[in-house]
Length: 506
Ligand code: GDP
Ligand code: MG
Image (cartoon, rainbow, N blue to C red):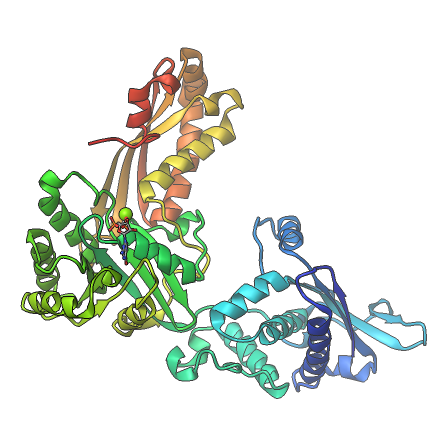
């Protein structure tokens, strides 16, 4: 076996590279000794050679753009040179398939592999295994690709993943080594059913409700500090009202609430009931947060409790700001609330001091169903679908019109109506989303450009935007675009407010 490793990244040190080299040599040997390897390869008596390049995120993104036309950082890329299907050559080996090194040794190159250790590191962390295992795993995965394995269809995928795991075991890097996640916490059914990245987890939605100032944001920030999730703007992962996603190798908790919970206090209780009801409906667990300094539940808390009861959702009481009171002072509060409802758990925390938060997460996680993650670890957004829809329209304006116009335009979503399926089980089960949106521009001349000849331009913008919005909403979208001229809108406060560029005081 001849494996040459070129390390073009600083993030992976010499020692790690040497360990990696040892492992991958063993791995390739194990792979090539498999019974399914074409006898023509075995009989050629050539040394198998593979080039592995370790690169940074920019480099692998560039390769993805060049070769796969996707603008993404991925963990590994394989470039096979032989035409093979699951170890079998599609045609005979030719003299030009072989090369010779300086000592005259006959070599058979099967392809190149590019791995991004930075990306591997993140994955290793999120799966809870060592970076060694992740790096070698990616190499093995790649070797199998070079030999014609694939995972596009289920049966092929099963074969490939079984082979992968067999090799990993044989070289001493089985799944679950470096036991940060025990197999029991993965709750594995059959490994084949949930390959790479889809570890079964305690996973679900937690509606976090509570009056303003009890510390919800502080808690979510604290959780964000420990979460592995990266908040990005990948629209396909959007669900309304997601505030934070907490990821752990064995769990994913999606915190939801409803925007506008900080509305004026006059109608607070109604509003809270309404909004918490909506958030709680789709949730697996409802968590009511209260301030430890106030013993007695008021109307808002009582109503929130009623909501959870009505929906028959498990209810947790989070007593925040526990740092601001003595332990004894907590007792009357707990007694008062306990008489209100049958809480599944009452957990005192200090979100500010990160005290008790981990225990709280354990309590929530224990209550969530075992199922695959809803979201890939890195693709989580905190934008609402409305905001993203507006952005998608803006994107198409940018795409189709020349530079001058987009900067003078704003997109306003006038209405965003969801039609649920007849047999919908929750509010995300939609058959259609109807959107009316206005494109606001500054000049009549801009309007003319945006409309285009016979309305061709606006049609194109609309069709393209609708397609991307449909991908996000995962249902049919009806999109109606209307172009308005508002002279000098950029300078006029009232319009800025209307388009959400400033905070409205209401
Ligand atoms: P929200 O309106 O429910 O999102 O509440 P915030 O997270 O904005 O917090 C309101 C105030 O309470 C802020 O001044 C926080 O610093 C404070 N706060 C939040 N959590 C704690 C805590 O655990 N202890 C103490 N002493 N103050 C806290
Ligand atoms: Mg807040």
